[in-house]
Length: 181
Ligand SMILES: Cc1cc2nc3c(=O)[nH]c(=O)nc-3n(C[C@H](O)[C@H](O)[C@H](O)COP(=O)(O)O)c2cc1C
Image 1: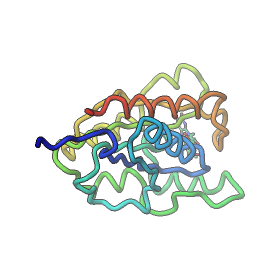
Image 2: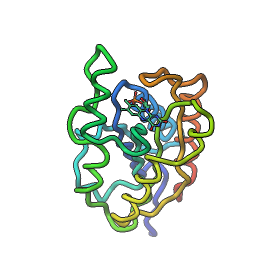
Image 3: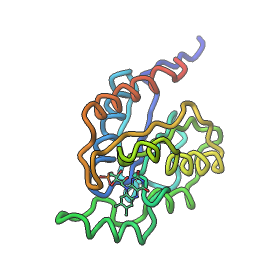
């Protein structure tokens, strides 16, 4: 009998970097959306993520905040730590460093997202971190399955703009639905 692969066999991982929790919330909603679509999915903070992605992963989603027009660097993470009374979430390796070291199964399906300030409008339109993440994933042999998404925060430390968590969940559902059954 032919081997049947169903959506239940699909596993997705959402790797995120986050200072104040906004990107983390987005990652968790994207993972929840993937689960809604029947995919086994989890959100993993980048410092906890193994650099070798398992062969049984069907979809890898990677997201980071925009910092100074790109993925965070050590210096911008230090800057971020001065903006909040609470400890920042991603204190060690960030997405930039993870992409430098990571190994993906050949052709792994990938998607990228970022969080960014919602003002000024002219700046918001430009792609920054997510473009760099997409390039990094392609360099590692990944296959992009969706255009990068951008989720907006009202101020430097958040919160997310109204409706962004719902949009993140819907994007997760859409990503899940795009996987082959
Ligand atoms: C040091 C620093 C630099 C930032 N630079 C930018 C930027 O260039 N463009 C932008 O849209 N947002 C910028 N932001 C806002 C971040 O994108 C925002 O804090 C982040 O998306 C919130 O997600 P987080 O709570 O998960 O860290 C910056 C924030 C910090 C702390």
